[in-house]
Image 1 (tube, rainbow, N blue to C red):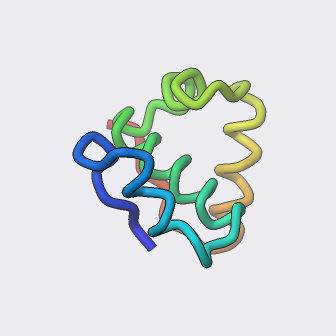
Image 2: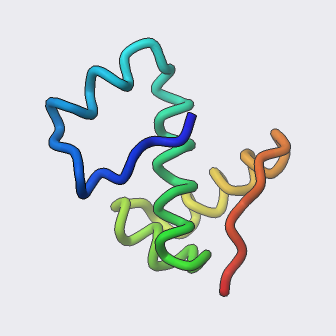
Length: 74
């Protein structure tokens, strides 16, 4: 479930849309959208999210194994 642009919604508008989703699904969507906004730059996306590059790499590897399309570095 793609999330709307967070720059146009406040947290009290976003949270109700997330109810019913798993934390794992929300995290995956956040990682993928951040990666897309960082033009596929995994190091930058990891910094934006406060993750280590290793953690980002492991998450991306798991998503790819699950068949999720990963934004490519552009």
